[in-house]
Amino acid sequence: MPEAALRELSVPEAGPRTSVDAAGYTRFERARILGARALQVSLGAPLLIDVDASLIDPVTIAELEFAAGVIPITVRRGVPPRGG
Image 1: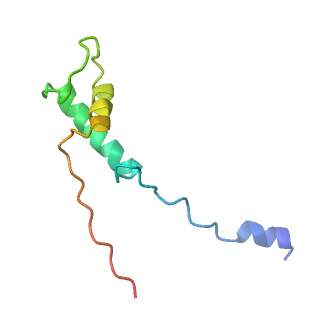
Image 2: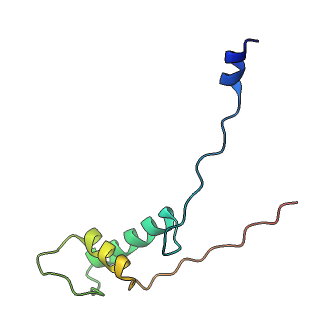
Image 3: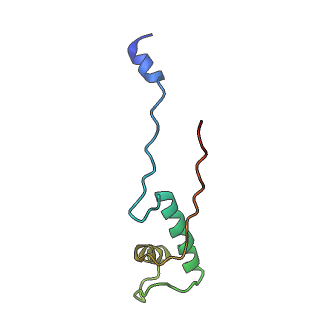
């Protein structure tokens, strides 16, 4: 088999690892927290920070609360299985 054909058949390397941001959350955890909080805000939950009265977008409000570190949502991570 030609070398070019072997390269096409080779198994691709593993995808990029999920990075952790400065607060210790992965992008998936951050998205889940922001989405849950935005839903709460859109359903009338009290705001945890003072915002301008003209700001009505729940996602933006959730992002501001997340940046301020006041969202009372925690992430529970399971222990990875032991490989052997």
